[in-house]
Length: 201
Ligand code: GLN
Image (cartoon, rainbow, N blue to C red):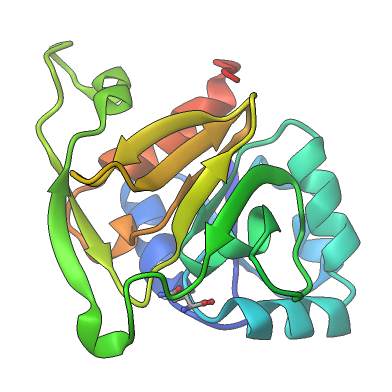
């Protein structure tokens, strides 16, 4: 399996390291031709407006959109989630493939970054013993929240107050937080499993 990580800006190195530790070929994506033979794509955290500017400059907007609609797994973390979304509340170029509304910097500035344990029942899919999964440690850095989801979107995790912070729409996965900044590889394992033909909407 060959997985690309969008490497225009942001924390792509951490995703690549985790993916390689899971035994998959992980490569940096900077040009449209890098997408050609990929089985899956990760869009990391960073700055969503910068992604859009650079992606447009490198001719990547349409090829990434095509990858999203092709049925291959695509995962956006934090700024990557914003980039996938249909609406970010104010005008900015987005891929617009994930039927959610997001609110950027919803929890405040960099100093308001926080960490919290999340219940993610869906991670049972990667538990070896089939038990209820233990909580996943979510790291939120100037994170967006998902303010609403469309009909085909499955909510994967919420904060205690009900704020949606992870969701899946078929082959598209989105998290407000940064699994690549933890030692816990279950979200990456879950993402790789999405390519096994296990579709969900
Ligand atoms: N605040 C960034 C944005 O709005 C996202 C931050 C992140 O990816 N850690 O694009």
